[in-house]
Length: 89
Image (cartoon, rainbow, N blue to C red):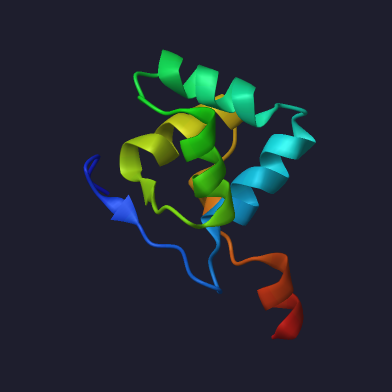
């Protein structure tokens, strides 16, 4: 994965839903996430961060790396198929 790349989201792997679920489990607000990402040198506003979670904006590789570190999770968790998809299979 190259740091300048963007990772496309689709109905099978919705990174934004995974990020949101993990963030809520950790009891971190969207505003706090944006602020923590800024500390990781990711220039992002809360509004842009919300677009990542909603799947409106694709996630950059460097953004995903920062999110992984902030949420103390794995790429496997972030890139996992959504629960709805695995339940349908």
